[in-house]
Amino acid sequence: EMMKEIRSALLTITPAETETENHIQQGSSEVVLSDIETKILHIAMEFESQRMRGDTVEVFAGQLSLSITNTKYYLQRLVDDEYLYDLVAIGSPTRYRLSTKGREYLVENDLI
Image (tube, rainbow, N blue to C red; front, top):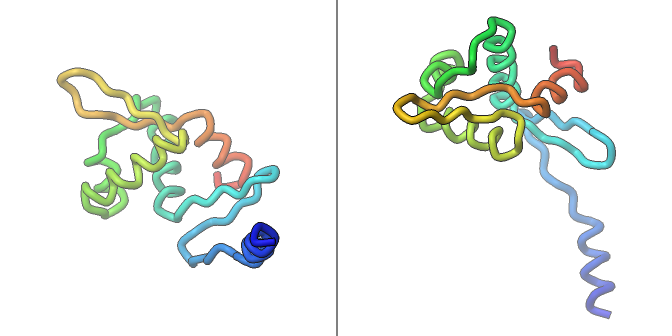
């Protein structure tokens, strides 16, 4: 009986939406990237089109007019979700590049 009540309650819960999020339906799952995350993907795409091997958190922060801390947060989220990948080399700063998933997101959702 209690499980029925819990299931019923769960069905009535709807996620809160904010103006800064893009809600995009892909198959049966909803992908949500913030405007800043989408801008980061665009910047990474520009690096790719210029045949650059990704760039550092400082370059992304400068282009986004964000602090290093905020930029690191968004870059890490995109790496964790596999929209970007990070290139780590001893003695060099970490560089970030657009992954196949990030490129697909931009193309499939008509963001480029």
